[in-house]
Length: 255
Image (tube, rainbow, N blue to C red):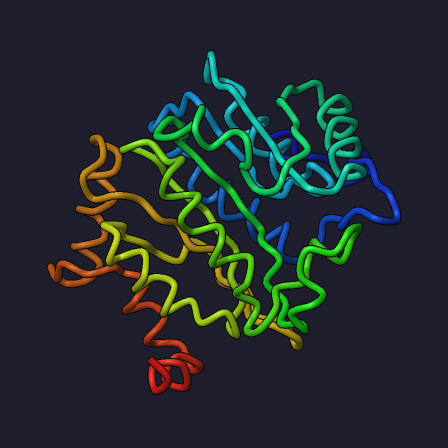
């Protein structure tokens, strides 16, 4: 199993680049948990928004290494992160096009409707708004009020980039109100489920997978499985999953 994810000792680093941490590991674990589905999905184009150290995009490339013709792209606003990601990829003998840009700026028109898998560990930590978008490592975690400033920018970008069969894997924190995020995506035609949930003394992380009900056979298979686990109800399984978690009522009262 270890050969299917990036090896920490081969991950490059820089003082101004976010190192792999609990959220990075949870996202990669979610991809590993869904690896069989990803292989069956046979994506042609995979994209990571905010690649940081390159741990996630490198791990994804290693997981899907047996699939021919998959193209990988990674973006980051931090020039140090762009260099570090390239070094991490090279150390693992896998390739991705690494681009210095804000989310998918300059790429969104060219890639519209073409991306089959998007992975993102967004800046989700609640911070003062003036910290959002700062240069250096702060940009990796500063999420503004409720940690949603960057997430709310990401969602419409993702909707534009994803193909009809596209899947999104995104890290969220409890204070980001994942229930409201899923309802927002549901209104746009996306179903969702929690792939991995991790709780520590400091935070509760949820790796959520989104896909369109109108997608290809792998999307329809995902929806069919969702309906079975939800007792036949046509609803996002993540809504019912979150509703079973202790924090959800606090947020629902604010909707």
